[in-house]
Length: 260
Image (cartoon, rainbow, N blue to C red):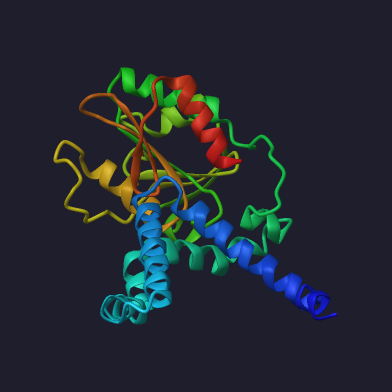
């Protein structure tokens, strides 16, 4: 009987396990592919070593590690501040009520599907602008609502097409300064002023457009495309990092995957 009592689970226990699994899953999605995942693994290893030293009664070593563990919560807040910020933005995002389903907003238990965004038009426009060295900055909204940032520019409600994007960033166009924000398959704002990253490790060859792309993707879960006015090269930015791609086909696949 005692054995059966040990493995007896209530409904609350099941819900508890599901919630913990959800938090771990989403946290992994946030840090996947970033330096933070290595830091997280390091913290887990230190904790496991701490438990082993405790079990082996290594008093001095376990007490030293215990000191780190005791202040671990504060260290986690400092180390993972960007990831925590994105998670809180996702939870408190005002667009949760505008989506059909809350779980779709969380990207949890969601079936894979094609995005509504015309990625081909966006990439093809960027490629053509790159050939003429026309600078451009395109931000694609994902889960975090970008209405607050969009209000720094001119509100729009235009369907995404290649000619429209090219005309916006045409050098003599009054709308070419700043960024455009695309939500779904609609250009929701132009001439948007983005938060600029102050990260000192960014190479000097990258200008204000690239710093703005890094800044907005650091503070939200949006993704960004930058067309350099100097070189005509296209940069893809996600989570404050430059994502490497071989050609436009691979770039389209990456964007479609990130927007799913």
